[in-house]
Length: 307
Image 1 (spheres, one colour):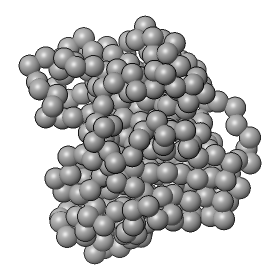
Image 2: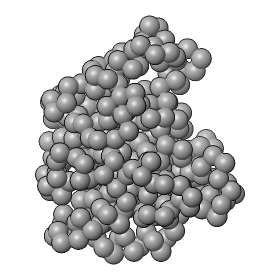
Image 3: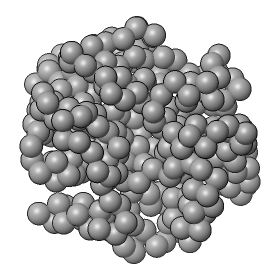
């Protein structure tokens, strides 16, 4: 009950669900922060102090739920360290109308914010049974051949569903997901983005990428092909982490993304939903910075938002 109250508090503090026909598939935003969450471990600066002092300001690691009211099925994108709370929040947001465990989990890559939550499906916690986990080949092989993740496979807590890049996987008659690769720090796996097709809407999900100009596709063209694009907004601008060279953790700055779309039509800019905010990114905690970005025609993702 306490966590449900926290979810409701988020919604009535400005995190309001958008109206949506109950018959149409939709996206629920279950997390918006970078892998370390918000507040960030060890951070005692102003950016995090307010969140340490107030539970209502805490934000979970980036995650989406794809929900189909017709079939009463749902799928999770990313298995984050916050998966326990996110699955509970999903139940609160949907009033318990769906199974607690999703029909499947889509994982982008082997950085902690995107797959570490799979541990909660193991025998020490939920002891789930053959939850489908969709991932590209290197990511699937990483889970299958490295402990403790391999134990999840051996004990049938999860069932790996290897994906092929640029090949659609049908989830229902009207819903499909296509994985594609993006350049990122691929120490243990490749990095995926996902294109989600629901019949009525098309979504793009790219929470992590190095720089847009390193991708073999044009991000502005890709955004034009969909209705909503959730894109990497880890850092707002150069110099955000004093004393650290951001070239060692490359991401497109929000300022760079906005510059790329500067001359695009308003309807194209409106498709861009910025997500995956590092704790240092003022868009996570500075309302004036959020409003500045919104005035440029872009969306700032909100935890609990229904799209």
